Image (cartoon, rainbow, N blue to C red):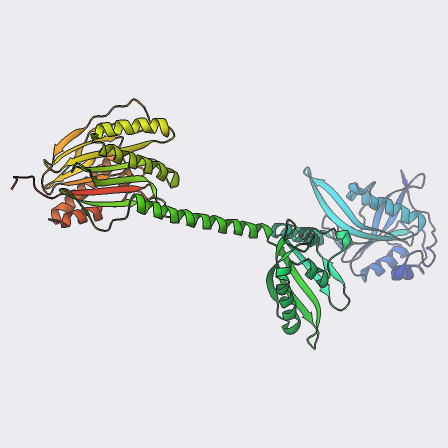
Length: 548
């Protein structure tokens, strides 16, 4: 059971309610039945609130049978008053505090209300967090509240800080994400203000306060102080905004672990005579970015050096040949196209050279992968094949020996190869291939595959190989290549072989003589830009002794 207020109640003495509000209501007398919204006291308070700016309500206390306040009822509200539910002005009249806002009970705000009503001394809660749960989800609002006992009731005014807190939170998050802070130097009063993020950037305790411009110059790395001085001079002389980058070392003022790279955008506020009064600056910590940029520049320098080394290796191992090479009984055109344009060397290779007995070694190979690792393995295989050929080994024995060497010395490497030995005296070509696409033989208007397959290199150390042989004719063309020429995602390798064979046949129908070699090479366009490609095109030239 609750009881109404006493029938008669004396107004508080002048000064109990501070300020103009207290002055206005101190002359009112409290008539019988204060709980009646139509009472004279209520009407007087309403008239006062109607002209008050901002949000304010006047509520009467509800007491239990012991006289203790158990609730408040709103009897008057200013036009600008608005609660968390969106009620405005007169819509708030008749609202019960604890029925409408039950979470207020027991809070600092509620205790302040009770204390004000008991003592008559004004109260305030600078930041009250109001929490209401809807659908199981808490909703928070923040207010600054002031209250006073007026005419036997409670006069409350409040300011909603939701927008300010939201803006502050967004600003703080923006500063964190961008490593940004702001500074304000008042050149007249000497007052300096920093945002919290700026203290963190400079490793400075906020309790120590911000740095003056003179102190900031002292923590700037000596080599960068002229940059800061020029910027400050330009601000003073021209008033134009300045953007610059410097290093600061708050701990020691010199290069070291504490050094931070900062980018500063500064502008000056000047009076009518052009004298600078204030400097405002936004400071961004770009240390991580600068270090990353330095590391990237270092990596680029290493890459450039690696590229230079790759070009040198490529020129040593497989020099670029603009013109066909002339070998005993043959003309040979060669082309190497690596997948990595930034590193001019990959895992594909070729060899075409005269041996000491007058024969010619022709070979093309492919080491899995590309780049320097594949190039290293490629160089070893290429030199090994060349050495074995000079030892007068036939192609089958060359590949068998090469396979054993690869299994023992580089078990992490897989490779394919096609090796041929050409004897110009009788135009006999002996060849074999290990997991490699077959070479093509173009004779007249026909193009056929020369098949004599063997197992991939580096798989079984006891693998054996045999070789095939064919007698060539003058003007025959051989095309040897790696799989980058025919391999394409979603397409069968045999389909790629057919396309290359068709291209060769078409070119030969429209070209004759020495021109055919160059024309066929120009038509050999790689199918893949993600794999290295080597191509050898060989034309048989001189006739066998006694052949017309």
